[in-house]
Image (cartoon, rainbow, N blue to C red):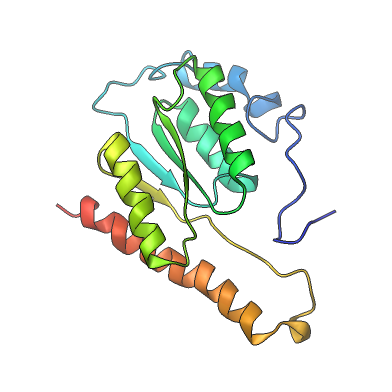
Length: 178
């Protein structure tokens, strides 16, 4: 059953579809990346800083998990799901055997708000340096018929999906284009 906001319910960590479980859990990371800990066999020069919007659940959390287990520094963006973002960060830190905040940073921002996007990037860059990889994953959905969408519903979806991707991409490119 899907919940408002377009995401399935809480992640089921026991079936491999979330951090630490099944075919995509720490054991798979060990096989794919060496140890699944530390740098996963990569040098410091190979480590990237990745910012993932909408990283607290669903596809975003799996993307974050894979980058973290591959040895990269990960900024986990969330807007309303702080608890889930912090739980994901703690789980990844435990799996990797690293200190809190060492390579995983949950950061709150509504990507539809340019000022919050700027602050999110500033915070991630202050912690990790420049952003090397941006994953524009944040999204919202309305659980109603298209004919029942209000103008406000439509503007909010457009702001998150389109404006959010624009604000994040524009800000990320400032540091990527050298």
